[in-house]
Length: 280
Image 1 (cartoon, rainbow, N blue to C red):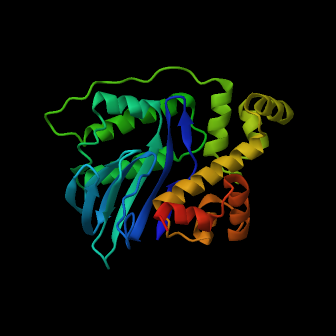
Image 2 (cartoon, rainbow, N blue to C red):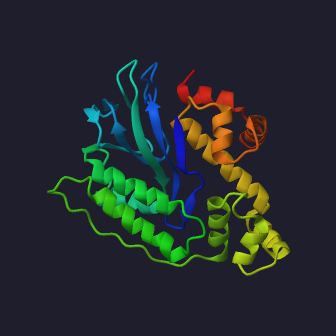
């Protein structure tokens, strides 16, 4: 069973937190074939119950247990999961962007060290971070603080004899960045387009016309595209999820509405997309 803790992107000019959740009774990335997965984004996954194994194309092979943390790199072929016929529990967060690439250059993220064995405290801090991250209507300076907090979490994964270069965050959000962040992080149910316009201190018509002029699409279409992107990430992370489960997780009215909108935006049905993920 999957419970999403972060369903909409939290995006700034520095990078984005994409998807976060916990899986109970999970089976890993490819339980049947154990084929390599290339995820396309960064992720951290912490095992919260059960045991298993991590392997990647670089030759890494490590046992996993409760408290083990796997860092996934966008281009790195990898596999992880419990023994065949068994399940485990996990919590995860996916992310992408320039700040994380910079941290990788600085050594805070290192593909040669994909697994760290932590404990319950790290899991608790990650869960608390995702919960705070998912809180809607955060101000831009608060979003920047999330990068510092997450950087501290990643630093705990490093060996004690490694000191990564300190990286800071700076800059200010322009109108379009703020608008995109609001559209991405707030669901239609919790924050309508008129409310977003008021948050930006403009009328709805001004908001709609300016957004379309600067992006080429309407705010409503942008929001739909982001929901479909979230669905793609969810299906990539957990291809075993049904259309009904994805629809419920992302706020679509039902599985048929989800399938129709997914096909309209992605140009491929959810079923066909799953096949590309699992290589079948």
